[in-house]
Length: 483
Image 1 (tube, rainbow, N blue to C red):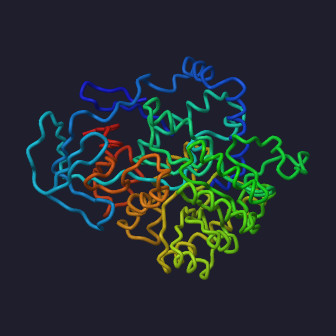
Image 2 (tube, helix red, strand yellow):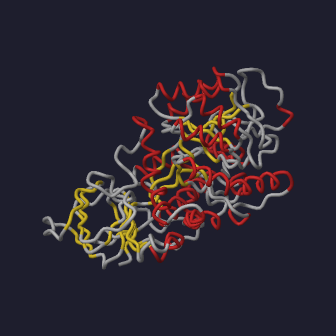
Image 3 (cartoon, rainbow, N blue to C red):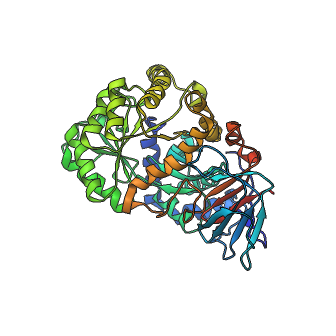
């Protein structure tokens, strides 16, 4: 974790750092939770800290500075306006932005002043589709490694994610509640996490990783090797849907993810399959409505997307194979699209056989899906969905640059800031971080980046965070300052 100077600066040691359609997530989650329940987290952490030295310091991340921080001499991209504004000051007090205005006011008593040298200030980046427990570790380690190591490694990956400029993550499946709590309490350093807990899937659906010898399962019966604490919950019928959704909300889920179609590498879940009925989808939506939050739905194909929209889902994940009528329906109903700009095999782990064929089908649909989103004006969020590889995880910013095929640089940055912040706000009272995200304005949460260069002219700056982002602030705390 970062050590702190006497002035509160973070001295961060560098660490090199949906596949939600990757079926191994359920197995990996089962492995992590089985080890945790069998031996306990504390024992694993103690052994791992002693032997591995994952962090450079045992100090917790500090609370927001008691001193106001005044930024001067910068150009502002506020997350909403398509250009830059000059001649402004920015005052941060505690975890929030206290003021944005013109001129150069006198610094408040005791304030720390940061002269930005004409660089660009912008909001912290937001990823709308991430798996915080699985992003950086290879699958064999997740399946066989010590639980303490896995959790510490996930915390280290969270810190690397923050150092890439992503100050907030929307998690779309995995046992992230403990990691989120550790970050929130300053025991680990990383982005905010909006957790969904386990994704809700059907028998035979994406995420059902039971061996065939465990079939059949009696209605309402136990999961077998897939237990109730995992990243995938098996449901069959509206009553089971309601039960499992309520369990995730009880644990602190900010939103719920359900699986309405097959996945790329799910071994027995064809990509063209529609895996939940409208009644089952509606049961999830009804429970979330009662809890004043939303359902987001994993769906690639038109039939599954249309069924989810009819059931009242507020967001669709992926949708790479949607058609014109489906896109028009989403736009008419105001349904969000959280899609990933997958273009080539460089964007994913290598796959073989039928899974590779499905992956290539998704890649082939990416361009059309984005064109339909633009054509119909669908509310679109940026997500990366990178998993099981530090090499891939480091491409989080590179994935943003793929969007130049369909959007201007300003539109890309809006997607990854203000638009994603608007999507997160749909969690309503289940929002674990009340406050406005993705924008720089009075009263917003103080997440910001100081960029050495102009990302509105050169979007590739977001793909080089180690050089481009000279200041990284989350919640009013400076985690990087290389000025």
